[in-house]
Length: 62
Image (cartoon, rainbow, N blue to C red):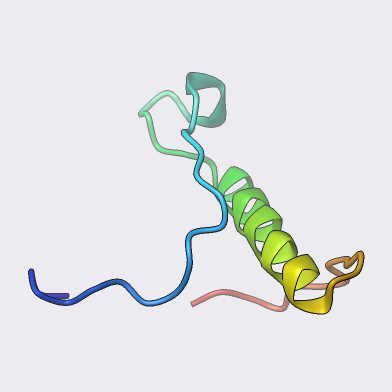
């Protein structure tokens, strides 16, 4: 992304990883990151569906 490109999408959640969410090297745990992605996608899905939603499965990330 160059300096003139604008991000695509919509910010639905903003959070900061705390020390308990990291390993001894300071890297965040993948499970914590996946959990935050699930929260954000759930917020957007509920807003779009105008109803309660649930994540049934996630097949992978790349």
